[in-house]
Every structure is written in C-alpha cells, then in structure tokens.
Length: 215
Image (cartoon, rainbow, N blue to C red; front, side, top):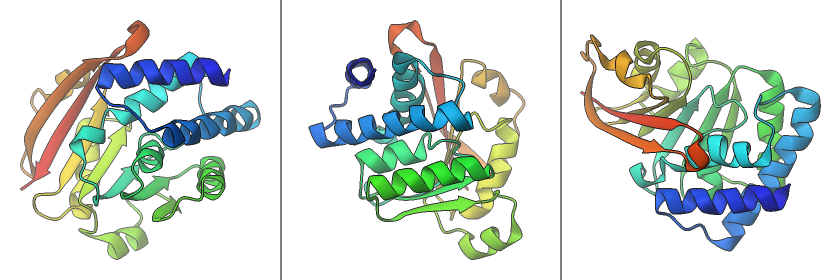
C-alpha cells in the first residue's frame, strides 16, 4: 500500500511541477500510514485506496505550495484530517500553520501526527472560526487563510476576513463547480487575485483554486 501511495505521489509531483526531497516524501508516507490506521476505527476520510488518498488529498493539498511564501502564517479552517494545512507544513517546515477543526476525533489525529513527525510551529485548535475567544486572540493574525471544500464561498470569505490584515490572502480550494459560486458574488471585502485550474493525475477530477486579497 505504501509503495502505491508513494508512486502516485511522485506522479502528482510531476503534474504540479514540483519535486519533494526524499525525507519529505518519507514523512508524508508516515502520515498516510497513520491515516489508514486511524481511518479503520475513526472514519476520518471516505477515500481509502492508496492512489486515491495520494492524489485527492495529498497532491491536491500540495497544489497550494507555489502560492505561499516560506514564512507565511497560515490558518486552515475546517482542516479535517489535515488537508491542506498539515500536508503543507510537512513539506515546508518554515510555514507557521494553525489547524482549526471542530471534530474532536480529527483533532486527536492531527495532534498524533504532529507528535510522531515532531513538527514545530504547528498549532492544532479544537474549535470553529466563529468562536469569539479564538477570533479575539487571532484577529488579523494570519497572512493566509485557506479552506478546502468548507462550504459556500461567500461563507468562507466572511469567516476569513477578520483573521487577515489588509493585503492578506484567502484561498478557497474548489471543484469544477467553483466558478458558478463566483457568479453574482459581491466582493466588497476582497479582490479576486487569481483563478488557477488544474486536473489531477489519473483522471481523478478537476480542481479550481480561487485566490482573494483583502482590501
């Protein structure tokens, strides 16, 4: 299983035009093995085959790498089992990442991965973006806020807004239907900076990354 995962990961790297160092690929492999172990008992993801997990979760997350600066402080809202925030932290250690997740079992898994991979400057928070305490503590505290399949685009932008300073980026990861969400969207708080479309390897679907800049 691990070999199938790693081979699919390498194919995904080619698709994205990146090459991971051996130790980073090995760390993602450890992450994958733990995900499978926990998933059998905790149901963390509906995708279970190694190739599907590699492409639809890990490679999909890695697509954000070219958009980030090494010292970015990132908030991943509704990270689930760590996609994209934890994957990005594993491969780019200089990033400062906060994973925000409402599911206790997923938070436990994220803390487990943090511990076994010995990741520093990674914060795992059990909660929601709407929580007043977290918002008060972290207002305008992040350079980038990301989400992956969090829900309606308009809702994500409202959640991201208070956590970003002027010029900060909100990045929404969407499927092909993401374009329809842009239609009629009133951008009072953000400018649409970029729309990036790509297709996952092995015909596993099209993706759209929407990049917004806070006004």
